Length: 363
Image 1 (cartoon, rainbow, N blue to C red):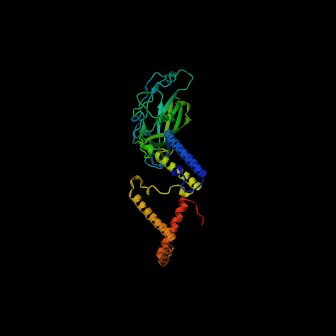
Image 2 (tube, rainbow, N blue to C red):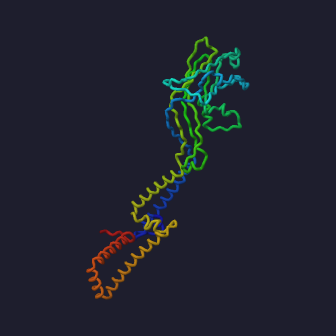
């Protein structure tokens, strides 16, 4: 197609050549603009999440085997904030699991009881008419921020945007004299690394990071338990979501789109100007990319065809000069079937050459 920019490949009006050049330049401009737009989109695009759900029999959860004192730290005063001056944590070991109800081993859920023994606790807040409240933040037991020594207030530790979202995803405010039913689902997310291979199409992932999604339902207690809070923790389902980060746009996918787009342009060009307008010889025939063997064979084959055409032309010229020799040649040719067959093939080849390179011949 690009050779048509220089001149026509066969006899045709000059106006068609101008149309060819316009179509070629427009196609090249459109193709180049598409390439730039696709690469810009790949640079700006954020990874997508592909989720696969897998059923399991147990889920890691804050459950206790003997006594809760092994996993609970008593509240301590950590700051001078009048609203939330005390903080404690419940950090289960990684081998504590909650089971399905049909599993006889158990346990199925865990209760956390918070009892207020300080008579001055309701007076810690500024507004004496406000009900005392607690702030609870839940994390997955394998990704416990206390165990991993992560802090949201320390400027020395940098956390990702996803980790920041977990802080607000399972954050609740609790009040005394309630039973809270805490239900959760467990998921794992695998993030892509910062390697350049991810943009090419060969993903490299970081270790999976588990997290939980939860809901909470409050149920009022009797008035006699005004200083108590009970938290019932149990799984909502035993299906774990395996989330994988994937890049929708990669260099390999862009090359595939460009190849399909280029094929569409070539089909449109062939539809307008014919199939012989693409290329008379291919890359292999021309000896490109170090392939010299095929180029030499192609040149030898073309040379043989040209020599036969020259020989036929000389015989035709001699027949005009010497009619007797011409008659003798054709008499000998008519007696030899192979000569007649070869002449027919030569005429057919010459007809194909004229049709493809000079002008369309109607049969």
